[in-house]
Length: 640
Image (cartoon, rainbow, N blue to C red):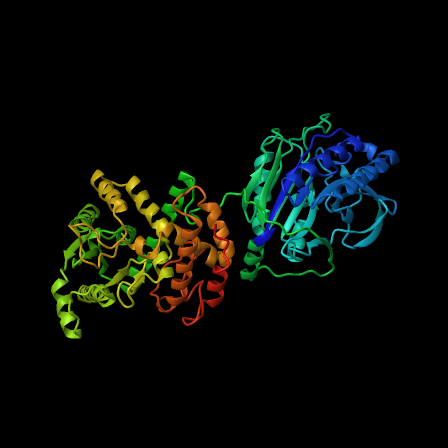
């Protein structure tokens, strides 16, 4: 439960119709197994104590009393486990029968939530037996305990306030206005659905989409436990299709008819973070009552997959679709800017590296979109002290294959003259030595653009903006930054996608070689013709920084939680020890805070994903903010 993680399970134990003692025993057995696996929330199907398919037997007082005895059995057994369980049963209240979910924790009956929407069509005839629940919460006595009863009832953990549970039953979710919508607005971060959804052709896909979409709309975790083996097959079959979802993503699932259970960790803190930043999510808890309960705060081992590349889809087909979409977004943004400015050309500095390669590919696409020749793009290579033959050659070949105009401007003499002007010896490889080259290159590009009636296309990416890995008023500046919303890990896949779909073998080969070239600004003299300055050796691995960037900006997580997530994500990589992860996380925070002044005056550029650093868009931050609180938390990391 630490760091906002809640281990939860949706289960469908086999049962016997109308045999409440047997069913209670199976539920208790499943609860025991859950507790041993450190599950804190266990959700069982609708009417699990009796079976959903009892028909008119529901009117039999013998069955109703047997269900209460079964609930008492569950309550008594639950005393020894640190677990909240939801169990379905029929319950008579004031002369009416209700289809209920009972919340049980450590021997306490926390409350009972009746079903709101009763299906009475097709194979369902629930109104024959049950009354719909209403919003009024009243107190009832069940199994010798007084407990709240009503639909507007939530359950909150005292030790983990971000874990607030709302309950609905089966058809409630399938209705036009599910009760879970109101539960979430009242504060529920987790919704549990006790269901008895029979299986028909195509229903599993629809059910899966329904659960995923509801969790996305409500910014919540959603557990769906459906009736399975043991229900009557007189007219229907039940598949035990259990699902665990979070904010639109299915975290765990049992395949229909295959048994087992769906178990994963829900990130309740993430749900709170999503809601805090979403102004469309307007809380409203009018009429709701909250029952509180206690659970021990323990370390929750993560079994859910933590993606080491959160910006890049893992599935090849989805990744290709995403790459094509992003390239179109970038090209369309640039095409609009070219149209608006009536630019005769788009000028771009081409280095033979990844970022300028992507910017050039986008620029060529933009010209095609406008029905203009690729030659209206002017690519300028500006070799100096650190330029290698490999990058210089790749830059020229790339331009030839794309059909863009190509020009070389050797800036060595200009930079040496500049050194003389400012009193630099031209030999000391300090920050002035490096930044002077970057600023001269920008000066050349700007003036070439003026001379040719065009504007400069920026090449810097999102990762460089986060780390401040750009020369202020050098490569930091342009008229339109097409890569500003694209992190470095995604830049690679965009270029790879263009290589895979290249129009010629020569273009494919040069793109692959650019991908294989070490990332470098090439501002220090080459050594034996090879790149001497490797960016990732200086600022750290981009795959780590992009991982940190995603969780810092997207969810506002603190260093301890991000460190824990990184441990899980990179557990299979021996290079990323705890010390390495912590060192580069500290470096990320230091650079991110110190370099905000560069982001405060960024050129325009298109947003392509959920994370961006535009000062006019998603990120507003004072340039002189202190990183002290974050660095202090880093000092407490549990490094092994």
